Amino acid sequence: MKKILIVAFVFTISLYAEYEKKIVAVCKNAKSQTVYLETGKASKFEKDKMQLVLYMDAKGRTFVDRLDMKISPSELSLLSARGNVIQFAEPILDGYVIYTLHSSKGILTIQRSYEMIGLGTKSVMANIYLKCK
Image: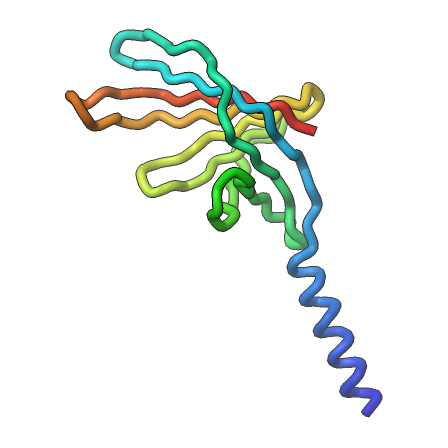
C-alpha cells in the first residue's frame, strides 16, 4: 500500500511540474500601427485591445497566451537573448510573428509582415507596442 501511495505522489508531483508556469511578462495597453511597404506610408499608432502573458513552463519552453482572444497558448522559439532584450518567433500559418521584449523597460514589440489581399495585393507590416510588468 505504501508503494502505491509513493508512486501516486511522485506521479502527481510530475504532473504539477509539467503545468507549473513562471510568468515572464504581463502586457497590456497596446498600440498598433500598419506600414504599407510599397509606399512607406504608416498609420498613426492607435489603441488596441491586445493583452497577453509571456510565460515559461517547467521544461523551460516559452509561451504566449493571448488574454483578449479565446485561443490556446502558442509556443515561441527563442531567437536571441542579449542583455535585457529577448527575441522570440511564433510560427503561424503564413510565416512568423516576431516578439521583442525589452525587459528592463517593460516594453514588448510585436511585428508581422504579410500580403494584404483585397483591392490589389499590398505588402504591409503590422507593428504592436505593449507595456509590460
